[in-house]
Length: 288
Image (cartoon, rainbow, N blue to C red; front, side, top):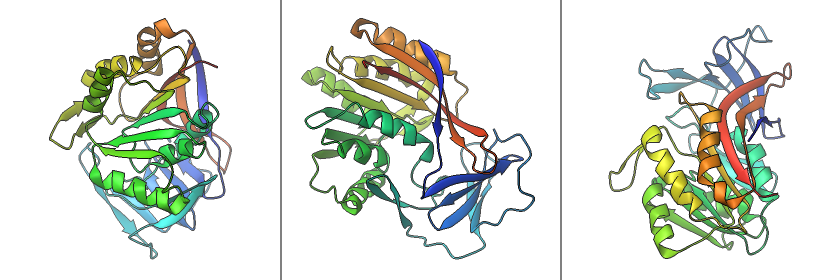
């Protein structure tokens, strides 16, 4: 098992402009926003930040808060792009912008390992940017999320990208239940990505708690891979968990398949100074 850091570099439609004193300033296409960032413990590079809006956190630890705007921002969102993928960014009540820019290195890495006819599964797929990034290779995709609203947003992003005719199955389902059913069906995939939340509910009220559900979910995902599979990617946000811990989880679950496991931090490079702002941890298995 190897340790590494995955760095999301700025691109034309996104950049981490500055960070510090528990906040970060980012550009999303034509707009800029300030959001809380506990890991930005240093001082910012700039004395004053000019942004279109700021997310003001609430008093609870479960994501409460509200957006406060200083300039008009389209409430229905605006179009953005990453390489050949088009999607809609939007200020959500959960402080993020309807996609996760620090995932860009993962998208690029997965694309390199897929091609026409490959089979890939995106669990907790959200608004589908990762699904579309993989679909652009010609792979067959299965996109699973418990939120009907998120799956509909994924379909809209597919249309925006000109991918409506791509072989993508959009499924509103509890991820753990879906994977267990795929195991019973004897299905296999060339690649799997899962980005589970700390806590969530399925469409039928199923309760998901990361620390309790992750080992069994990874074990079932391992049953969907075989000697010809290419990768399994696991990303984890906002939990008291170590990259080494989830790396070992994959190491043991996939021991019979050979290949290698890599784990570590995900980070975004700040434009002002080039420093790295950590955002999440990851572990991934691959057969290169």
